[in-house]
Amino acid sequence: MRPILRLLVVTASLEAFGCAATEHPEEEPPGRPNFLVIMADDLGFSDLGVFGSEIRTPHLDALAGAGVLLTNFRVAPNCSPTRAMLLSGTDTHPAGLGTMAGDADENQQGQPGYEGYLSDRVVTVSSLLQASGYYTAMAGKWHLGVTPELSPESRGFDDAFAIVPGGASHFSDAAPVLGGSPPIYRENGVDVDLPEGFYSSTFYTDKIIDYISSSLEGDQPFFAYTVYTAPHWPLQAPDEDLSLYAGVYDEGYDALRERRTRNLIDRGVVPDVPVPDRVSWVPAWENLDADARRVEARRMEIYAAMVENMDRNIGRLLAFLEEAGVADNTFVVFLSDNGAEGNNIGTMYDNETWIPTRFDTSYENMGRMDSYVWTGPGWAQAQSAPFRLFKSFPSEGGVRAPAIFKDPSRVQRTGLVAPFSTVKDITPTILELAGVEHPKSFAGREVAPLQGTSMAAYLAGTAPSIHDDDEVMGWELFGRRAIYKGQWKLVWLWEPYGTGAWELFHLASDPSESNDLSGDEPEKLEELLAAWHDYAEDNGVLLPARDMGYGMVDGGR
Image (cartoon, rainbow, N blue to C red; front, side, top):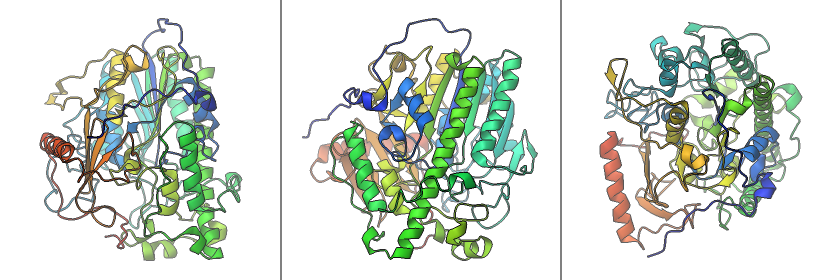
């Protein structure tokens, strides 16, 4: 049987990241810590400059250099399930996001775990911090329930400006991402209109700065949740940013996929793996005609501009903390909610007819207000390189995300590190640092226990890892499913994305999930199948009869 390779702390190439395995003096921080959690929307694993990306992200790179950059961090395959896991510290099913709103199969409808909104079976970290005396605020994407009683203020936020659904135009026209009603924006439970000049990343940054400022006036510790909608489709950026990456992607997605993979290998982020093959339903770049290449390259130019704009706004937010004198007592977390978006957005629901009649889809208007474009699977494979597939899949390309943790007054470990960790670990970490216990009941109701593990000891340098070597994590969304245990992973995907059967991979040596060992490792296969059945039983998994994913190769639903 092939031996399990341990993932170790990577030190050989830290200088390339501006990082060093240094230690900070052990000093008692002033008062209770503040918390700032920043989430990007659909950011690919290899998109950060610190990983060798051509996209400029100097502020996130600096954050990674001063803190810990986790390279073996897992999230859910899609937006709202990850948000539920982050805020609750549990699996998606106890939190009500076993599926997303509107995507339940007949046997799942009305069943516990498949509500499509954040359930009352969990208590949020914001509620617990609020009850313990913290000021709590959020700005940006909620995506955990539409009705007022499911809004952020009902889940422990003192102040919240939220786009309630999963996305919208990034400008003040507030166009929906799918045909139907305009998106809802609420501030503290009241529906609001967007101001003139609104651009999502800028406005959400301004709003969270205003909220934090109000807490500082009262000398109250804060928990601030900043939830960008960039770089989620539709891809749009301010005019002054639209030419930032002109010509950068003219070589195409195949060249970018190879370059991103090599950069990650050179930096020690992944082992020396082959460049992943392009998915079968995407044409080779060289087979596209000149007009198609021009349009495709423009899509990625706009995407990169959105990421740079978001990074610039994150820089403003971090600079504000410095100027306010609270940076040294603020624990900062940055993560993406899932892998890069590679699904066929153009065939979702009635998009094929709705988009060209509702928007100006001309090349000249791409990226501006009233435009509607997305990257697509060719680019998403490069953004998720070298991992398999992308957003909405429990393969590594869908659930492996960059994550940065920084608190100069507490975090002793710095640099590029690779212990297994998950989005479920964020709530336990914050609660431990805040000195707040997770209860068995809250507000008169029993609540699900934490499934995550605090990272505090690992980040302080007093523990060698976050989880045991045989840690188990499961995923099920849209009927696509996977189970991880001790560097082995089982994945089940419908065709054409998978084989329609369980596939077994050894991630330490094969992070690309390219070598199915299910026939070679029968004992390991049985071990992980048993782990899957335990996970499914413990979390109330109900498998649909068909693939419930969106934007599928066959034209979608």
